[in-house]
Length: 117
Image (cartoon, rainbow, N blue to C red; front, side, top):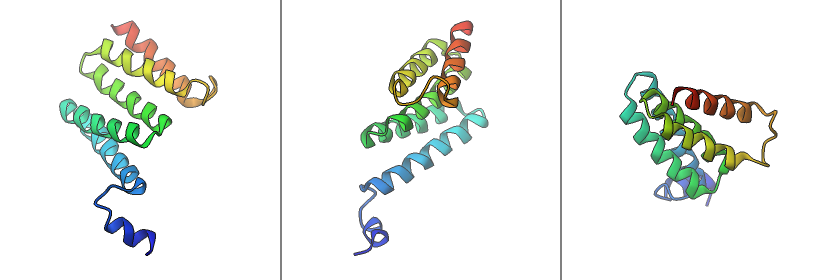
């Protein structure tokens, strides 16, 4: 059986389908954030976070936590945002160098949340 056919029959339980679902939820969450629908954005991103954790994809998890931190900051939850950024940094520590763009972004976001908090 081909990979495509098995995915059609997997009821969204295979790794490939879960990754697609994560990307869809993350995109929907960030689109909701851009529209100011922050509660909806958080819901979508939390679902995406659960999938990233289930998949064991730590950089994907860190990216989703960064997005949740942004939504939390926009909602006025700077302490919650800090927690997201700190956890994301813990996940990428040793996997990405400190000069990596994403690592620098997380540190910048954390500093901004602390300044506002």
